[in-house]
Image 1 (tube, rainbow, N blue to C red):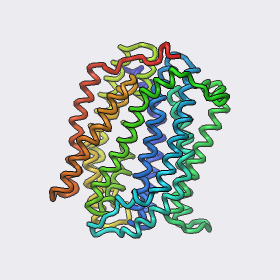
Image 2: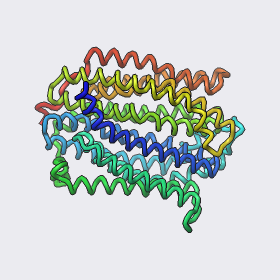
Image 3: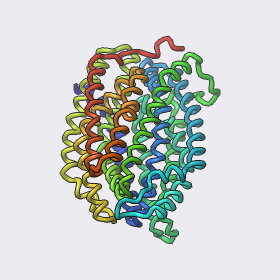
Length: 455
């Protein structure tokens, strides 16, 4: 157990630190935008919800190849890791182009889906204006984001998690400083509001990308996959075929899951702009407290994947079981703490009492659901590490679209239930998915080596 925990935390702790700082800065950003006005905060929140779909699509695109990268590294096959890295670059370039096209052509229409009167808070016209100001600048950061994720994913698969953490820290510090200067017009800079926040975010993203790329290429002895990576883009046909077969369900799953989360927020938004603002505060706080199970999930995928690539199936099963139990227990404690301190966070914001009360309730429901989500996250990554991507597709995004979204839509449209009750019901139905995931984990359907003799 001690050996497993050491290996787990060697990968997970840098990810936790990076995510903690990133989400803490996101909290500060949210507070600074909220200080300018509730309409500004809602506009930024809506755009970030839409761009979240793009970010998750990028993660999905690299995750399919990442399964192979982790198993290749477990075999000591640097050429295989290099091929999976090249595949990531190609597919991310395609997704970045498509994403920018969608936002340019349909950005305003997508944002309007979230804007409904029905509460005492907010103006649709003002919220739309600020959301478009923010979106048009944020588009500049999509390409560096996609590019850096190809590098960061591969570095983590090869057990280098510290450098991405350091780059992330520098980026979020830069983002915070620039936010303060540009949002409020400090030190002689113009007061740019939401546009200043977007400029700060894009600048920080470029900085992070440059740090990761430059370090990787100047430390080739540690990163053997980068040697000759751009000499050509030749990838063995058998590997391309396998990545597409295994990765396509994963890509669709991530995209559909993120789209599902966006649709759920849109359904909730029918109860008024105050709900959008409350969810913005709640999600920002929840992300800060979710860092452990998110980092552990990523680490589990890498550790288990390396065991599977080395055909050490008993160790993979033992590690997976212990990790799920560890993440459940730890998040019971974290969830309890979040539930108790929930009322403190909304009071930080310069917004209405209506929004603060909604945000507090959303945070507490998130705290109750946290152990459930932690187990789901770990189970998903374990099953995925064995290449069972179609099963994860059915398990994850299909469940959201077939179960969660119809239930949320039906009770929002056809009942008079308060939004808090609706949110609670939708969160709790994930208990069914948790049971399904644990059964699949115990049966060991994910125990497979997918890279031996591939090239």
